[in-house]
Image 1 (cartoon, helix red, strand yellow):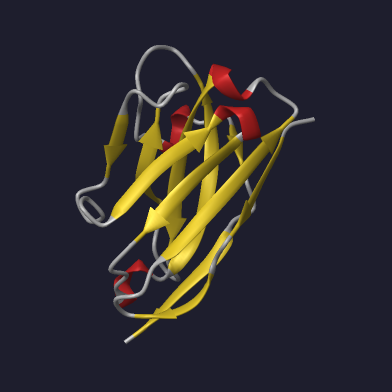
Image 2: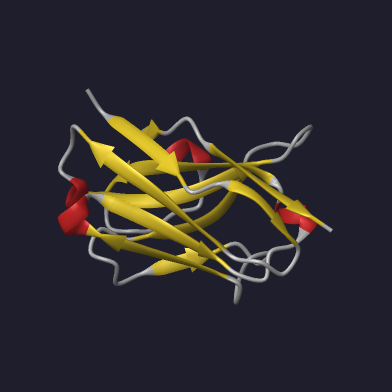
Length: 125
């Protein structure tokens, strides 16, 4: 059984930082690209960032470039999302997802095979 469990969300003020973590179990972590997505109230789920299985390739949504950094520790089966200079518009439920590696990091929601339940990030102004 595959499980993805996120942690690290919370309530912060604009300009603050948070680091989200996602631990995967039940699969060989290094077989998967990992992504972070978010969904704000009343909006569709959107791509945030993704990383290739050994971390050589990353990609980001334009809205978070320069502020967020995705990384992974394959020894710990964990992917991270470091979020700096947070803005109120970053408020959302953040989910991690796993995409069995086919050679390309992708932003498409439909490409991802497994999903976590999410962690709430709230940024006050």
